[in-house]
Length: 414
Image (cartoon, rainbow, N blue to C red; front, side):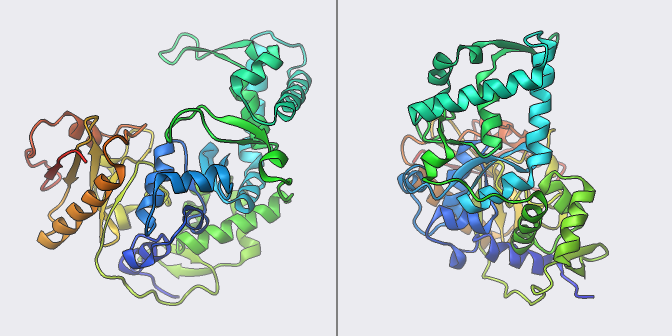
């Protein structure tokens, strides 16, 4: 059985995820294709994750790919998480996740409508409302949720969610219905109102946005295609990693793998899988530093993360499993970073990496600071313990923790 050591897996990660400087690419579209998507729950992730892997990234150029060339689409797919993907891969992901996302979302909304007493037959009523909403968006060409709601007043009906809890909220039907149409591949999130980090999306029909409908896939064929693409980017991995990343049932994962017929490999005591024609060695790149954003697709790529995360999970993830910004050295996580509201970038190293590594990390932080410039701010949507500590710091040095040496570098505003 072919054995993959942690060092070899990290070498693959460095090259296939375009983190090693010599493997950076020229477009965000290429990054998203090779990574099988960039997380988009936090809009900053898309831009900073692309920047970390591109030779000459700029915000305006990434926006051109998203909203002018339209070579990238925002879709709600794996694990009911928003991703940015090229249109062909978006069609695959939407079809592959239709059971785990589309049906789940629709069933939940029908239950809320029933509980609110809005309709006697929630399913039929919701389908009719979806068609009215789709027609309204098609008539306008591009529309915000507010504009569509003015055309379809039923979208203004309110739902009371999580009543009696700290998360209690009164929300309109509009965002839920628009999201259902997007999960079905009928609507696309377009250019947002506001700046590069805005989430106030405009909406368009898929044919209006792309000039054609997306390719139709059967669920099984789409799942096979998606797992094959993921194994190319993230393999070797365990079956548990595949199941976690897709959000599917174990039966669905096994059916897809039965078609792919991956090779079994030794991951140091655990059995992993890899594409059958992908067993060759990977040349290790020169040591390199990376600063990755919260929810970066590399950090979030596997369920089993010890081989690149080590003992730093508690500091760098929140209680729900969302990753904060991370600092990498030579293909593994060694710390985290944060940007203050005044523009400062703070780095916290969670282990002693040596002088050369610290110098390379500082240079990468300076590259990020320069790219963000005077006005751009990256504030993680999910605050991890380390991010909270960094945001509260007023000095450049903090005490050593019980986890090991902690070194903080405070850089002036860009």
